[in-house]
Length: 210
Image 1 (cartoon, rainbow, N blue to C red):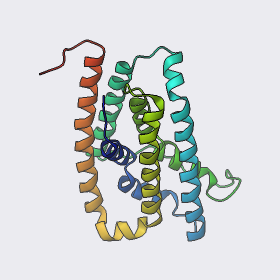
Image 2 (cartoon, rainbow, N blue to C red):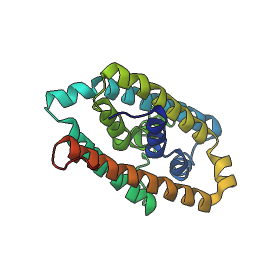
Image 3 (cartoon, helix red, strand yellow):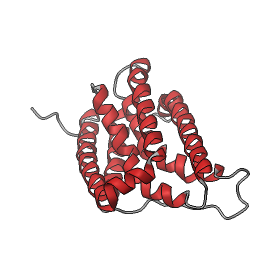
Image 4 (tube, rainbow, N blue to C red):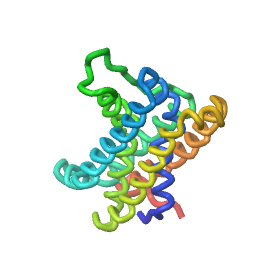
């Protein structure tokens, strides 16, 4: 399958969902001062970039090692994307856990790693995006050439949104964030169904429609 850069970038941004993370981020970082919150954002982005980089470098090897066909991963990724879209449309909160006092070695480090970096930023959905495009039939180099800038832009957008989260919440309000997440969920749901269809075609279960 051929995928344009902007399609990949849009998929990354929708799955990453920077706007939808704002309420959870503000709730998680409420006990900290502004300096610590800024440090948490930087650490979370770096942790997420490390996880995504490792998965991008080794994802193809994992599929080959377990003999997973690309079509099978298209279907599993499509199902996962649909579940994420369903949660976005129904506004189901993501599972989070705030560590008890004294659990962190440095202020905010644990929150930055979990649940902010994993699974809120570098979650199963975004990892599935990487695996889906790495197995799209192109060479690993050509896939990485498109994925790397898309992921970097997505992480930069996430960084900017989280740093300005309080301002964005004041401007858009709860209703504005609610509506935007619904729209992104609908788009992701359509993409998920198309991905499942492509997987069925790739595995030869259904024929390609004219």
